[in-house]
Image 1 (cartoon, rainbow, N blue to C red):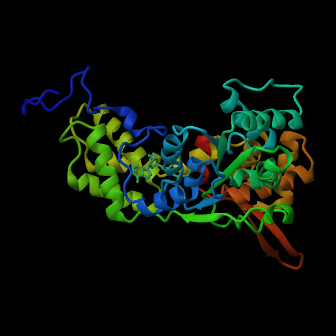
Image 2 (cartoon, rainbow, N blue to C red):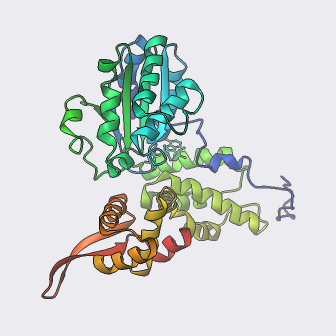
Length: 374
Ligand SMILES: Nc1ncnc2c1ncn2[C@@H]1O[C@H](COP(=O)(O)OP(=O)(O)OP(=O)(O)O)[C@@H](O)[C@H]1O
């Protein structure tokens, strides 16, 4: 960086970023503070694996962007380095069926993908369990964003297979960590009775960070990501306050990156309050973008229809959906329910004069922001 005070502008080959990757989604922070209790509790549950026993099954709950995935990935890296333990992290937004989850496990254990067709679930499952028994390894599976398995009605089958593996295949020892950011989801209550009887998990809760914790975490990111002096303490406070409004740390990290890009676009060496304000228009929607990214084509089609029919009655929305996709009412209801549970749309009962109660369907976010991201 050029520190000549008279030369306040960046030249074309200069950057204010020391390392832009620090602000990306998949970046693993080198310091992970303010989650000591949660890490201790998780270690307690996972420790038996190191001694050759099945770990305690665990449910991790907490709002989005509170460090759940990062905590599990940190511990899995340590645990996976131990002899006799294998760890697999499954993103259930991507793999939302039992076959998908077990394909991911297979891929990790065998280090190649299972054949894309012709392998029954039973065969896939026995290959995994045989390998575990032969190698005498313990498998720990994290089902991240597990709420998607609930929305697709797959969770009971997945857990049943994982938790009873040792009964059907002697020597196969598997522990499960499930992670949910949907606080309305009653994880245990929504499982089949047959699964409830074998699944008595430990619970670990991740609360939202308070403003001091947010500031501290973001400050550490800026030290790694920006050159010295790029962001002042007033501006950093502004970012922390905006982040605290949603409680999702991802908003703050995205905000820092976008504000930095705005400063660079102006050719400036430092971030101003305006850079942050402009960036916030986009960053406050990181959560929405993430939710929309995981939708299927049909689900996306329905969101598009609801954007055009925001607040209309369910019947009217169905007609438009049917016209666009050719799909029937049963499928429509399923998609409405899933999107409602995901928090993308709101399906509420309303009274229509003299005609009883009907559902009205509306977009849970600013419709323009949704339309822009579809
Ligand atoms: N204590 C922390 N220190 C440093 N970075 C953190 C901390 N907690 C979270 N982060 C960062 O915040 C972002 C979101 O964290 P993470 O993905 O772990 O949250 P999550 O609770 O799993 O979110 P979701 O439920 O939406 O999947 C990541 O970029 C992560 O690096």
